[in-house]
Length: 121
Image 1: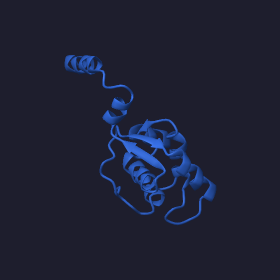
Image 2: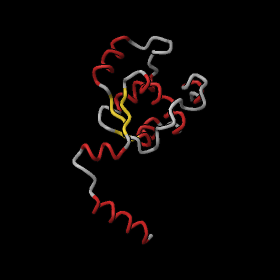
Image 3: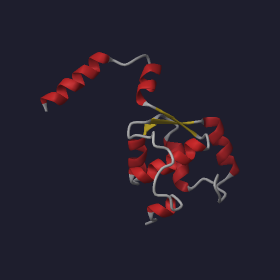
Image 4: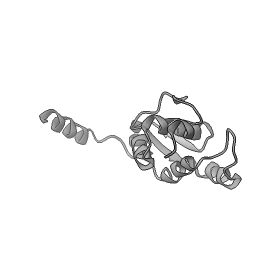
């Protein structure tokens, strides 16, 4: 087992504080292709195996929680890795409402039904 601080190169907190569990991530295909073509050189811009797994997973939009579960890593470690990729321009991070608006809007009826269902619990 590789220790989380090894994966994050000793960092214990993400540089970004805007990544929540429901932040939606999407791969920037052109930049990702260039980065993967460069290889996994060591250094600040090198990609670790976990970075590559994230890029593969995020070819389709995925939430931070989904990515973390897929990697089988703690959310805090995943956020650090995601922050690396966003900083390099390989991932786009969007708040979930902006994604819903882009898809045609938020279905208020559905949200109301969910709220009422949760209240009944």
